[in-house]
Image 1 (cartoon, rainbow, N blue to C red):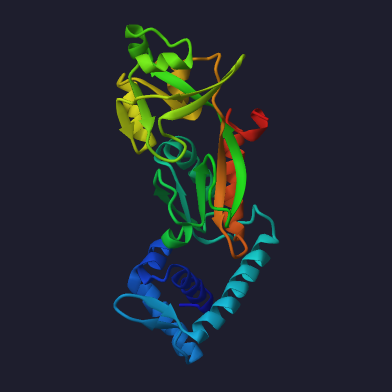
Image 2 (cartoon, one colour; image 1 turned 90 degrees about the vertical axis):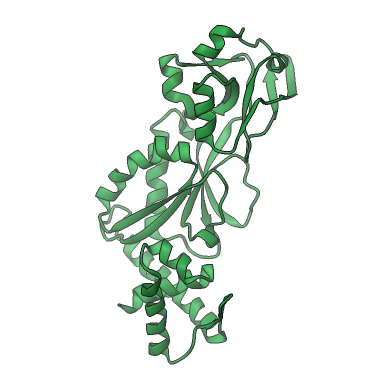
Length: 303
């Protein structure tokens, strides 16, 4: 194994304090990562980690080597990127995280375009409606929506989408559409039980704002579950427009309370802080931003 690859493995092991997490990031076996670190230690003549059954702790030499290794890897990737972001020299894994529904509907179908342009890249997609730890999970870039609490991250806003109240045509054929936010109290509601979800919403109308707390019949902790519930006529839901784009276009799902608006939801590309973002990750973020802006949810189409 070449020294550069071993250094990349070492950096990820150092960041995650885990051989298995590093192996998952690069899509290799744990033994491959262990051998890479052992190879480095043999070449350097020092121990880089103190190993025990419960934890992996960098030695003083390991901490010193980490600072230099990060710079070497970043400089090498910067040299590659200097050829241009369209270079086919990008190689290695990229691990990206995002919510099930958004990734499956809008991002994953477009990834073959990026992979065809950069055949040396391998992408691992981590689907989770929670905001997972980037370092802990070995994530290079996460797509997150709404308010960001963690200021210690590198972020870039790449999209924005309306939030609306929706219901299936079947449900609305049997229940009168609400005319005011207060009317939601007379309906079955489905809420997303994480992040920007919940059961309290602030609506803005022609004559001011109203904050409503609904009494949901159904709470779901994944966006795909909210979709399924609405399509099964379980009730009305506050959701992002992108979740039901096709169904809104076909009429299977209808927007209600159209004279009232909810705060828009921003889409962010989030990357770990503390080091320069690699050229291949920057290229992927630019690609995703281009794809998002080709839809009605791009920033340019809303601002």
